[in-house]
Length: 445
Image 1 (cartoon, one colour):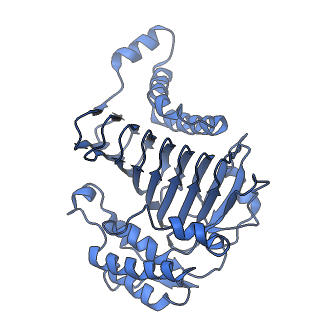
Image 2 (cartoon, one colour):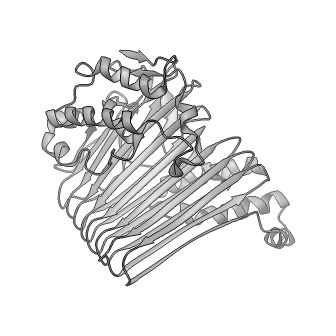
Image 3 (cartoon, rainbow, N blue to C red):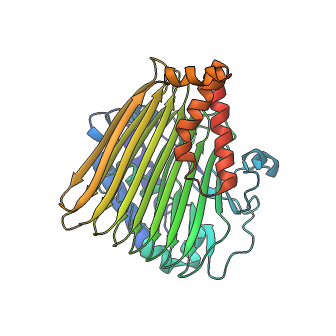
């Protein structure tokens, strides 16, 4: 079942009308509480409206223009037909992983290869988890991604039907990465809204890789919300590769909560897309937490990539590291707005935030705004931003050692991005990203 959005009314009204038609049918939820969340969320979305440039947090990204298109909402359970050979180019060489393929936001078991999991570990669709593990879903779903102030999160909460689910019980180590391969396949302009929930309990360890790709040239918009919980002494690495092509736009929201002595690391590699907004919020709700947020964008053509982060230190004795880098060519645009928030009483916080950008021509643009908001006095917090071009002296030095100008520039760009790429702890994934970035730089010079 699909629902075409009426283009004769405001975009907000299109979604509200679609919800009213489908609520209680395809949008029923797996429990009374989730069903109630849907109703609360659509009411809040109606109050907030689609974000516009009038809002400070959306000042440089006109997402309303992209949403105001004749998209179709794919509601119901009709699977898209994808042949196994079509996903082969998207697999990561040498990465032995528990693989789950989602087509248009829904898990396709015929394309997945989960393999043998440690006892108690669950890797499935969110819809299936709601039936098989309602207690875990009820405890964590909707607890970390707040829709009260985020219209796109409210919209996702109202319409969500499926997505990815991971549950790692206390003390369990998942040795192999869990790989969620997201594929868009359609001959229509689709508006997709997957929802992900990752729960890593006390003392558990897991690595999750998400990769987004497309088999279509149609215009698509994906409004994703992902929530993660990392229990006491738990460890979760979460990596996202955005490579859906030039006609794909998205808002990707991630919200994580950590407990005592836990480690959470997230990294986003943005390679292709039309307009992309990434929201990453981490709440260190425990002492002695370590939080790491990294991002890399290699822009070309008229790509627009907006990274917004918020690192909330609400307990004492924690540290966080944040580094986002951009390399921009052609008429591409990047936005970075990162806030480190230290609440009153959260003493002995060590927080670092940095945004660095290389702009290769006069048409590319970067808007950057690193922020600190601190209400404690025993802290070590720093932030900064740099923007510039390739260093002529560095190029001259490399050329004096026998390198061509082109090769010298590529090497300098690779060196600039290495600080982010080296944080990828899975070697085949690191090699894959290195090759992607190197191939893009070869087109720059």
